[in-house]
Length: 337
Image (tube, rainbow, N blue to C red; front, side, top):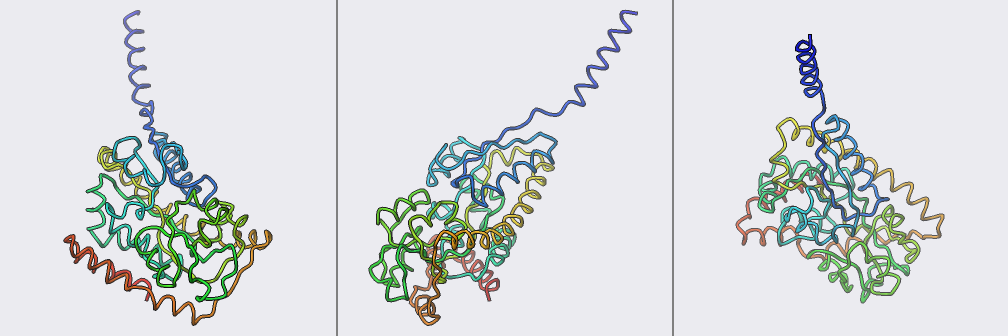
């Protein structure tokens, strides 16, 4: 009888062991954003869905801006194995991620938020050079976030292009500074966490920024003039996974990550556009003024810019990626035509 009970207990133990869920895999995500942005909201949804759909096998812990790394340090952080995931903008790492940087930095080259979704989706699916570039940097691009149009936001009203001359304007990457210079402005490189203080102290007179991010970063406290000239629009930060961590996932788990990421990108698009309307109402209530620029001045500024597409192709040609760059520009022009 004792042997029967012992055998039964062993069988029950094996059954329970088989039924028990696998030990949860906790992944660390370092993001360049503060908590109250649409991007961070999408990141949390993505993490929650992975947890739910994996049956608790995947847990993602999010560390917000400055907790583990500065925005300009996230690529090194994920390469070093310090985290498995980062949310970072490619334009901070133009030398390492030039193909990904172009949509994140070329100014005045898109018209609306949905074009962002179409462009980045087509680039990731039709242009093998994108994934090749990610592989060279030890990462896998999962999906990209959206931003509302980056309007000209200033401490004082700018009536038109003439008022830009001599003004200090925040830029990033290598293309935005040339756009500012084309208008007679003075480019000043600042990171996201520096914008409020930069405006407050007069380090810059204006910044390109979206209305919802003005609310998130409280920019309306130090700059109350928004002008309807779009300086930049395109995909913003991407969610990237360390390539070794990606390669360790089972094929089924990789499919789950990809599916949740596709859904997160579309959710992010819709939340981004909805946030613009809410933020505009908030800003008006806070005394922010919205100014319309003469169409002639908008066209003149755009016409005075360098040929960013041609320069991008020429630079990539020197690096042996001319064909890929031309294909990117071809897709881009099809999207925004």
